[in-house]
Length: 175
Image (tube, rainbow, N blue to C red):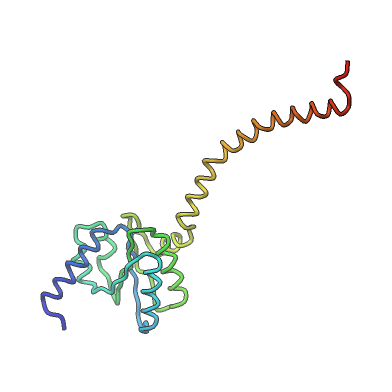
């Protein structure tokens, strides 16, 4: 059993972690084997996240006054947190894929970019394309009008050259 100082240190560590993040997924687990837990932690690290099993009352007290407070109030059952300071879509995808293969792992709630989300929104977030793909599409959309303008301007000169060439070949310019 932990002594009071260890519990206080755990509380302060959790509080510090919750202060610095804006993307948190509250999850539930029951009857997960050690091997499944190892794979879960490996999956979360691969997505750039962190994972911690928490006590509900400690999480509730540690979240007081923080943006994550609404999602950590009134928790029941076994609870864990997965959070990231990076891309929340990557973590949501990793957690959702893991939840599909391990039915004992469930979502309870989440906080994405400082906004509380429900289980349905987490699924929608997981179905979004990665941030890099969105940026690539955005850059393509920005670049497309300029590319079309250059193609159109180039077409005028090319079309004129084709007309002149056809005129020369058909002897249309002889006097």
